[in-house]
Amino acid sequence: MAAEFYCFVIGAFTGFVGCLVSWQLNLVVMHRGLERGRHDAFFVGLGAVSADIVFLGGAFTGLYSLTGHPEWWIHLKWVSILMLLSVAARTYFRKKTIISANPVKKKNPARNFLLGFILVISNPLLFILWVGILSFLVAHFPDAQILDHQWIFLTSFYAGSSAWFAILAGVILHHARKWDDEKLHALSRIFSVGLVIGALILIWAKF
Image (cartoon, rainbow, N blue to C red):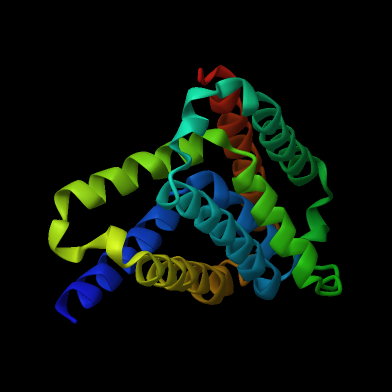
């Protein structure tokens, strides 16, 4: 039981911190929340977490060979780049009043979930990153027996990641939406610049 609990704690902590520092994803989630509402932002986060689970599941089941075939990932890499640039362009050039004055659009959980999922699953760097992180955790926390408790780790990872996006959508965005249009518009443009920087990093990244 001690190993299972230890594995659960490590998984939850990894998921929470991993999403906390994923600034590109958090920019997209914040943008979605300011434009359409906190509910939509949360589902973008859940979609992204689900893609991370796919990557981790691949690492657990021994799909390390994919890291030796970068040519398989180049097309997915450009999908991610184009999505980041598309969101950045729509964010930067939209009207000032679209964020807070216009009514929130009809909620579409499936579409928002898909946005987050595709944004992450199309980024080959994240797969390589999670393989490295998982290898580090297995090597440095042997008492957790992560390889023997894969489902516990994945479940707690999802819970920890979801907790971060609940805080982002439920608390941080709640306060951000109280700002006036000028502040929200300036924040929106800052987000767009950050997304462009993220896209440029992917363009220059070598596999």
